[in-house]
Image 1 (cartoon, one colour):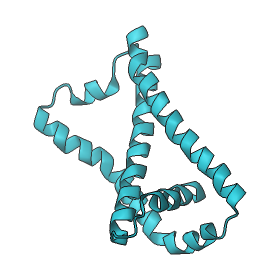
Image 2 (cartoon, helix red, strand yellow; image 1 turned 60 degrees about the vertical axis):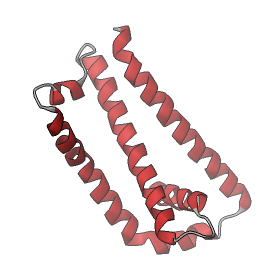
Image 3 (cartoon, helix red, strand yellow; image 1 turned 90 degrees about the vertical axis):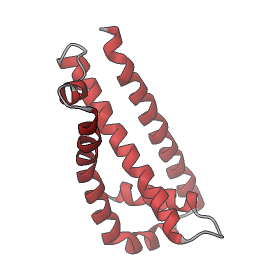
Amino acid sequence: MKAIYYLYYRLQQYYKKDDEIDFFDKGRAFVTIVGLIWVNITTIIFFISSIFFEGINLLNKVFKYNSAINKFILTPILLLPIIITLLTLLKKGTKQNFTMFEGERTEDRKRKGTYIILYILLTLIMFLLSITSPLYL
C-alpha cells in the first residue's frame, strides 16, 4: 500500500503546475495509476493465455460473441473494481501519507524515483512482449 501511495504522491508532484487547480494534478495521477494497473492486469491475462491456452487470447473469448456495444459496457465494468479500490485507498490516507513523504532525503527521493521509472518502463515492455507472445507459438 505504501508503494501505491508513494507512486500517487510522486505522480501528483510531477503533474503539479503553479497556475492549475489541485484537482487536475490528482486526476492525472489517478488516471495514470489506473492505467498502469490495467496494463499490468492485461499483461498477466496475455501471458496466461499464451502459456495455457495455446495463444488464444482470453479477451477475444470474452468479447467474441458480443457486439461492439458490449465492449463499451464490459470494459468499464472490468475497470470499475480497480477505480473503486484506488479511489477508496487514495482518499482514505492521502494527507497522512503525503506528510510522511514530504520529509524524505534527496538521496532517497532519487533512488525511489529511479524505481518508479524502472517500474513504468518494465510495465510497458512486459505489456508489449505479452501482446506479441501469442504470435510466436
